[in-house]
Each structure stands twice: as structure tokens, then as C-alpha cells.
Image (cartoon, rainbow, N blue to C red; front, side, top):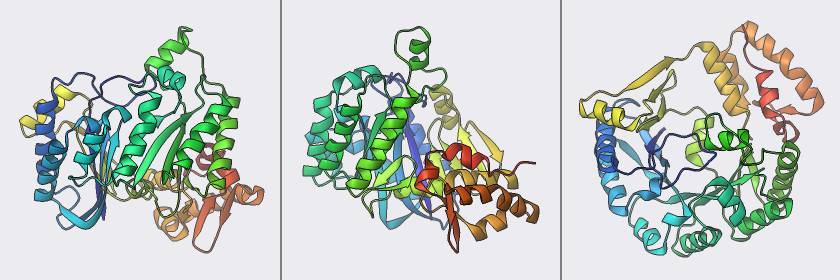
Length: 377
């Protein structure tokens, strides 16, 4: 079991908060797609010849800039070199302004069976603050069009904590999404990442900074409304109406191997991580010469242990006790038992016969609680 992630590094417009790798120039789009096809061929052995691919995720950037024909051509290559499961989760990240009705209907004739749509907000002032390319009307229309066209597997991104977002509007964002019966929500607090346009604008006083108290209050509202509407918080930022878990992302958190294709894409084979160069011309040039420009990190036992804690404890499934004991030494098991004891006593963590996991109370403090459990030499 494994997955493939394909990074499409192009956007119509730069969002002020984004620190992912992308270009707003489409000049190299054709050459990039040719290179992605070739990388798929070059790396066909990365996951093992007999490995079955169960999930494929087209991310970016903005993969919805691809036409249905381009998507089908991409899958022709994938089918040629990879062993695909008979039923797969195939996700396309999309912006609302790309999802006009005719394009959505064209995507019905591709392997795509799930959209991940960057709504972010249903209010114009928030979208303008974030530098989004779509309008509030497009945000609502694309969801209705997707549902009416038979795309039942939808997830949308929503962002809270922006200075323009009132508590009333945040609640309304959630009511709109749940009212449309969107089966999966990914909700993120606005983060001011280093070297982004948002950091620069805040430093220069051109935009207001994030208010931590407002963000915390809106997170509490998120938990209350999603629970009321029958959504399960199965990961810190991810909510679904069971059984609509995001299989591809869940596999990341469970440390299932995956192959990353395209500039800046990361791969994981269970023992090491590899990441491609985050530079479009250099990526293309290297692939044209039959060489992938990338870096490799072989993970130590300590790395594997801490990463398992970091990803597993973010989810409702937590971490498996037997797997922890295999990853860590006897000394480390004692260290872990000592570190988690106060979390169990305070109700921030819990356990059953097979697993440890954070409680809803603990998820509010996840970063600190998990770091306290790390293997430290």
C-alpha cells in the first residue's frame, strides 16, 4: 500500500500567506508537464515493483489549472508504470475560480473522484486580505456545481484567525459548509510564515497581525459546531462525517510510504526522506538529462520514533504501543512512560489496550504535549 503525490507548481495569483513552491508564470507549463511524465517513468521502482498504489493526490500550486485532457494524459503515464488498486482515492486540489460547470463536468471523464477546494472563506473581505483569486460568489457556486455534477467526495479548506474575520462570520462560514453537507473540512489557523508577503506586510504595518485570543476562540467555535453537525475531529485540523476520512493524508500521518513527483515534492520510503529541488527551470533541466535534482535524508531510529509520535498523536487513532516498543529501546520506553504519565493523569492523553492518544482537551495543546514525549538524547 502506498500513494503518489504530484506537485503542479503554478498559480494564477500568489496568496499572501502561502510558503509553498509555485510560480505565477505559466511559461514553462508544457515543459514542466513533460518533465513530470518523465520523472514518473524514472522513479517507477522507488516504492517497489509490486507495491499497490491506493491514493493519488494532485497538489500544488493549483492543479485545477490542468485541463481534463492533461489529467487523462498524466494518468496514461501513471497506468503504464505503476500498479494501481482497482479502487483508488484520486484527489485534485482546486481553486473555486477554476471550477466552472463545464470544467467540472469534463473532470467527470477523468480518474479524479475527489476535489480538495481552497474556499478559505465565504466572505469577500477575508478573500481580499488573503490575496485569493476567487470571489465569495464563486466559492459558493463551485460547491453547488460540483455536488450537482456528481462529485460527492469533497473537502474544503477554511482559514480562521484572519484579522478581517469576525466571530459571527466564522460561524457563518461553518454553517454554510455544514449546510451544504460537505463531507470533509480542513480548517487551519492563519499562520504568518517566514519570508511570505503576509509577514512583510505585517512588519511594515500594512496589514494587521493575527490575534491569538481571537484564533483560540474561533477554534473552540470550530470544535463546537462540527461536533453539533456530526463531524468527527480525526486529526487536529481535519473533520469529516464518517466514513469520509481523507485516505491520502491519513496515510501520511500513519507513515505509509509515498512517492512525490514534481519540483519541491517530498517522498518517503519508510527509511528515508527525499525532496526534489524547489526550482522549476533546474528541475526541468535535470529531468531532461535523466537526472533528478534532489536531496536525501536517511532517518535515524530517533527520527523515526519522533516522527511517528508527531504524526500519530495528531490523529484520533494515536500511536500503537507495539510499534512504539519496536521503534524505541528499553531505555526509551521508560523515558516515554515517565513523560506521558502526567498527561494521562491530567486528562490530556488517554490509552486503551493497544494505543495512546490525545484527548480533545489535549489536542488544544498538541504541539507542546507531543514535544514533551520526544526521544531526546
